[in-house]
Image 1 (cartoon, rainbow, N blue to C red):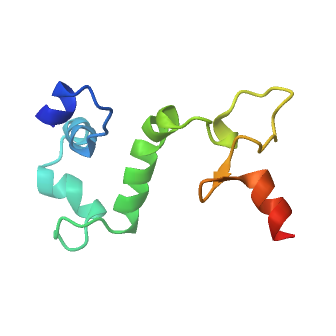
Image 2 (image 1 turned 180 degrees about the vertical axis):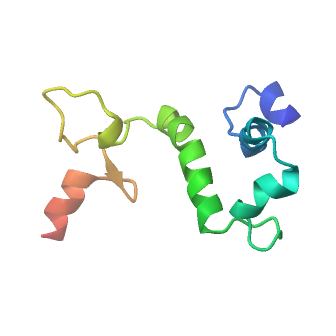
Length: 99
């Protein structure tokens, strides 16, 4: 983490999220984390994966350009895929070549 901060790189630290939520819950660490882990192994179960995905979602959206369609401002261009890439290729060009 020190390296990321020193290099001014963007990152997401799930530990901060868990610490904040654990403190709010007033549960012990074990009680708090157990619903999210597979048998206390430190690996997320489906509920833990869901919690992680929703925790990181807004941060990832901030990093993306263009934004996913569901996070774009409503404009006259809504529904325009010209900026999106598929395997490094413009989506519209890919679709034209595929058909």
